[in-house]
Length: 135
Image: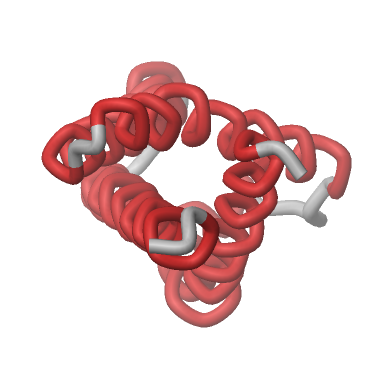
């Protein structure tokens, strides 16, 4: 299996694992408290598309360049920045356009985006370094 596919599947599994914990056990109450009037049933197709695109972005913009540069420093910077920009796109657009969108929830979600993206990237990077590369 190519390095790209190994990285893609590892990233997808780890990111989805952490995000499901977040969505199921941690943020569910926050969303209910802040935006219950906007919540509906989860639509699977857009969720799958998001996870596929986000995983692709992590591999292309964070993991492959970090591995090529052999730089954990670049990995940390790129992962935190990517998480911040991607989550900010959603949250700040909602803050700018939706009446009553909570600033507090936006800040929590931005922190989560930075954290989960960075944690996932670190795990996959070292998994690749130690396990997949035989190092």
